[in-house]
Length: 343
Image (tube, rainbow, N blue to C red; front, side):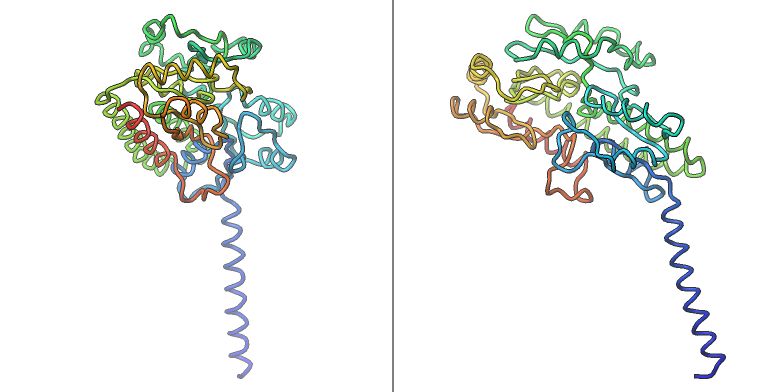
């Protein structure tokens, strides 16, 4: 090989190496979005497409209600260009670390402010810690004033002798309602567009396509409930489905409120749920994903009902592949599980 050819080979190799370095740099130069729980992660990656790096803080299989960030998690949040979180009771750690960042904290969005928050509800027979009611004395901070006209009468029409609100505690499980998922997606679209205006048209198109899928999910829930024989179900576990039950006119009984730290109900609570399964002749008693299922199995053994998982979608299982799991797939499975329970 002559000297000219050697030079060309070396030059070509250098170009390839530099192109690789440039590609890596371009990859690293993408905006970095950090999210706390799976639904936010899923909504964000769909709206962002390939334009941004999206990270999920909550480890697979972990419970968001007891999550505490590691030093590495804290650094990940601090280095983010945008940090998206719910802003509910389980996110007490968020306020602590954001305040520690001072003027170096990233842009943040608390998505609970994008919806009309509902107070956590204590239903008949539910075991709850009275101190839990006092956790948050200012639930109204999550109220969306733009929704006033649409929801003025909701709570007035939603009360019964067997249901009472847990004063001041906003139920944080907003994503369990597809209509709230739409509002969250719109908020994420706007936040990404503010961060990266050059791609705002892409974000808008991605959000519109996804919102159409969420509208179909909402229609599937409504059709399923409308055609069901029953409108009541039992969860032998915590109850994170307040918004879902509210939106679709379902009645429910459960062992604990959504954010309860209890997992050992008293005998009277279990007996009450057994009576309700028998009273309504329910074929299914629900438990949650990642639950030990002890309560639900006890109820099932006493009644002949079978145990099924109603997935709150706050996280994926320990062995789940994030690329093969989606909010929509989880919620469509919930439609079918509820169809079985209500018929």
